[in-house]
Image (cartoon, rainbow, N blue to C red; front, top):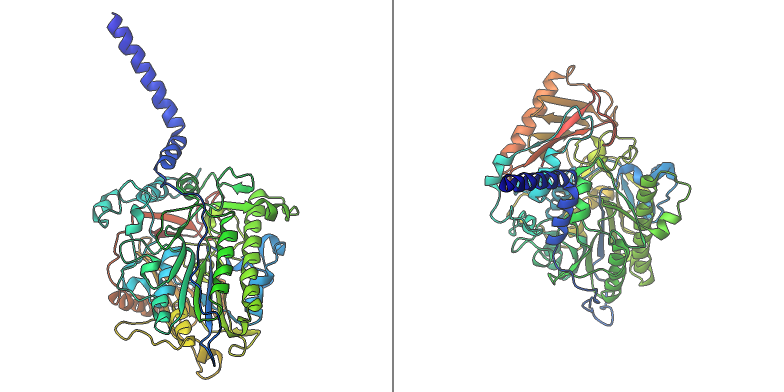
Length: 559
């Protein structure tokens, strides 16, 4: 009898513990995630390689400073009359690049998510040519995002567990660094490698997100010096730092994954991880300023890629306190992050001027993709429809500026479609570097077009692909094809730039011709290096956190 009583009591305890575990599942996951985070050393100074003490005699090649914002929407800057919170967060420094140079009115990202866009920029090639089709993400992230449904969701995501067997070796291990095995092949030639052929000192700051397999890290892909992080995101400050203003989105599984799993850390040329000194965007800028000064007497290429304004939404108290007129907490944090990013870009521009380098520097600014819908803010990409992860204009039509005094006319507006793939050839041409001859380079040098030496469009067609979701822009006609939904969308951007009038039913011949273009492009692409593990809905006309309604447009995003 005593044994049965003991067993019954044990069963009750087990049930209670199981119930508590289920009720606090995310807290337990958070504890496990924190326990797996790598060791992070205390902050220590970075010693930047010093260039010559005196400038070389005669002319020297221009410096190239490429600034890549993270998840910045078309409407997040005030250049076009918009801006965060209806223009309550001015972005004068970012705006100045477009005002003092060229605004690519139809500037397109390499993809609708972070990593493939960055791969397109760094190689000048469609990432589908070398299998880097999806954004690298840990398996635990894919499982969470592929199984979590928003409250009241009509359509939910899918997680393809059966595809785990096809993942590259080591990429599915329960380790924070396993995701780094999902990499751009080391045989791809990066912009940094091309610039080095002309004697440029090459520097990387911030986010890499192109993998960390042997041969794929930034310091192994042409960068003389690299300070930042390999993964796709990072904390800006420790979560409970007294200088941090945080915003969490309870409906968003991406957000729920990031907070417990991200370290507050950087590496320098593959060193052990160590803590930044202060708010991440400030710290990266502090070091970029030092590096510019160290290299003022030799040509340099800087790839400045802060994680701002990607989630987790963390602002510095100083910037948050400067925006009391914004009453919504989430919007205020987002605006404060934007304010901070703009100020830091201004510091980089001012340093170029202070060192007498600004007139001999090509400055390029853009965002890796459109603003994210999962942060719950509806206006980030206005006037365009769609968000990050979609190939509607809101996902791929980004701010895109170039400034080079005396070479690019100030206050220029270039009307024809150009893309991230063009940064490679344009920067290389500015530095006098030859392009690789042993592979297809999809981008073109834009400088002759800007100077009127070449007329017409740089591209008749542009392509995007994420698994079964594919897009072609041919002239002004844009076709999106979601094979999983057996659905196409056709728009004439010349008369309908915000994609309000879908024309596939009235243009069946054009649809078929453009589907044939996609098929021909697929024939030039390779099988993805790893399979898509999730497929999830992304709604076009409202962000996450808002109720889904029957009949609303959505795409299925593969990753």
